[in-house]
Length: 179
Image (tube, rainbow, N blue to C red; front, side, top):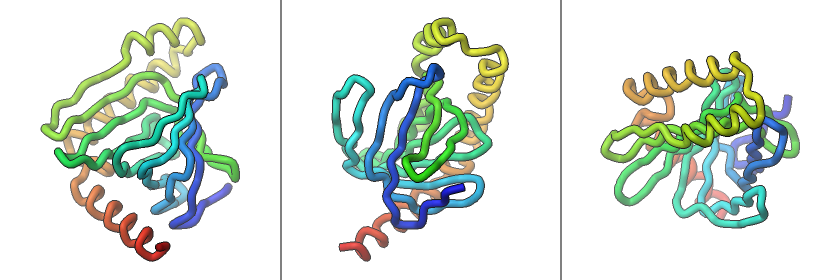
């Protein structure tokens, strides 16, 4: 199993259930890697959509990926406060090419004031039928939405204010050392 080192840049690729490439993020900096998870950061990172459109992320974002949970978390550090964008997705795999996962459409957004919204339910229902998501996948995703909401309420893992401060500060230290 490939384990990128702290400060190393990796590519992140999300796919759809049918195997089609969905989105690619170039040059995400690894902050921590373990047997269970990877923490990385995007900051003005090039993103390429499956249709070829390109854009650049606007603010620093701490990324949390886990080997056992069917979600990943993007912690966006903005002037008005921290927002979270949580993708319901397969656990990641990583190799020399990229960190990879399957995006299952459903997202949970948490705003700086704590408001939570479940997004893209229509897209999930459409792709579930079109791509034939199994009942097992459906149950796993629904269970992981519950786990995710519990983590948000309990400020667990990436939802802890300490998590954001610690990993953003580590990112700043690494970028200062590299310049």
